[in-house]
Each structure stands twice: as structure tokens, then as C-alpha cells.
Length: 287
Ligand SMILES: C[S@@+](CC[C@H](N)C(=O)[O-])C[C@H]1O[C@@H](n2cnc3c(N)ncnc32)[C@H](O)[C@@H]1O
Image (cartoon, rainbow, N blue to C red):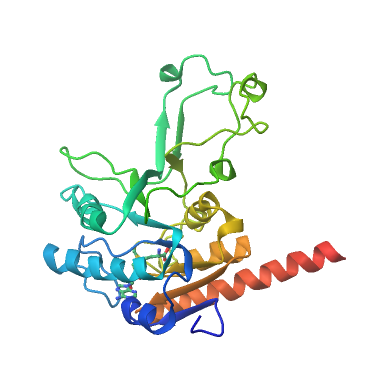
């Protein structure tokens, strides 16, 4: 370890930061969402560079990520797409094929609609369901985009996961005792994860970042990898600090890089608030 202290966000380019602060294999889990090359209006980063430039750059970042990731580590790479550019996430994934094994592809479901009539006989579903949020697409050609990808890369494709840590209760409770391997009322959730945003910013309030993920997303990735096997989580594109917030909630050390000081300031403020809130909770609990 080159650093004396983890739990920091550096306002710095992530490649330089990883080279400066992180030893080979020092990181257990990387959870991150790089810019998507879709022309998103970030404060500092130019998201309009050519596709080839972008892919070359992502490859360099990921080479450095590979170096700092432990042999049994997990890299969870969240990527989106646009209606006119559906390939971009897969183009990135394909570039990484020479350095990682793609062990799982998780679909982050932001919104889903389930008409009661499609469901069949599920006693818990009493009516039509429509949950979550998405930005409506105003076009006759394209569907609303209600999901993004989380590519789970590992070095050898052989990392055992703690699937039940993000498991869900059985619908049919007779399954709780039926399966020998069963561990109570919890089953593998599979590769579709419904994760709604925690807060929808009100119309008076400016959204502090144009493309953040909710803290539940990194939290689930870290739990899936296994909390007990995770000593350090890295987010090279920390944005407004959602990976750091997830780590605080799970009691795990984090490090992050972010080139935009405005986003980093929001991240630091949110981290202080989170720490205050958890201190208050602890005091109430101790009283
Ligand atoms: C998709 S956003 C990540 C958002 C983050 N997951 C969150 O929930 O707030 C990508 C971020 O990468 C930052 N960024 C772009 N180039 C960077 C670089 N070379 N080093 C570090 N951060 C960079 C951008 O400023 C942007 O905040």
C-alpha cells in the first residue's frame, strides 16, 4: 500500500491516480461507471470524442484497473446506451475481452411494467404493476430505455460469488424446504436487478450530476462479490460519490478518483452527511 489512508476521493485523472497510489493487486472490487461516449453534458469531461479515441482511452483505464485488481477480484462495469447508439456498451465490453473474462452480464432494470394478465397465478400480484423511473423517449422508432448493463469481469472467470447476499424471497414457500442447498427463504435473484433511484431531484433542485447510479447498485455488486472477501473498493470515476456511500453503509474501505472538482465536492458533502447520520443512529441506539 502506497497510501496511509483509504476512504478518500482524489480530484485527479484516474489513470494517474491508480499509478500514483495503488500497488498491483491491492483492490478487491472495482465498481464503476465511466462516461458512455454519448455526448452527455459533463462539467469537465468531453463526452463527444470519436468512438475510436474513446475505446482506446477506456482500454488504457481498464489496463490499469486490471493491474490494481487482485487475482480473485471483481470488476463491475456499468454502461448505458442511447436509442441511436445501442452498440456502445458492447463495444467497450468487447475491447476488454483480451484482458478479462466476462463472468456475468447483469441487467440493471430501472423501470418495469407487469400487467396482471401476463402473470398467471401469483397470489401476491393483485393488479397491474408499473414501478421505477425512466426518461421517456419521444420517438415512434425507439422504445423507452428502461435498463443499463453491469458487466461483471474477472481475471479468470472463476470467482465464486455470494449470490444469496443479494437474494430474494421465494414466491412459492414450499421451495424453502424443497431444495437441499436451500438456506431459508431466499433464492438466487438472477441477472436482472430492479434498482430504482433513491431520490428523484425536485424540479427546483438542480440534479448535481447528469448520469449517476443509486448507491444500492454498488452495494449489491460488493455484496455479490462477498463483503468478507472485500478489503478495498475502487471507483475510478467517482462522480458524486455513490460508490463511497455504499462502502460507508457496508463498513468497507474505498478509494475514488474524479476529475471534476464540483462533483467531488458534492461527493464529499454527501459522505459527511452519511457519516453524521450514522453517528446519530448509533447514539440513539446506545441511549
Ligand atoms: C458516468 S459518471 C460516474 C457517476 C458516478 N457513478 C455517480 O454515481 O456519481 C463518469 C464520471 O467520470 C468523470 N471522469 C471523466 N474522466 C475522468 C478521468 N480521466 N478520471 C477521473 N474521472 C473522470 C466524469 O467527470 C464523471 O463524473
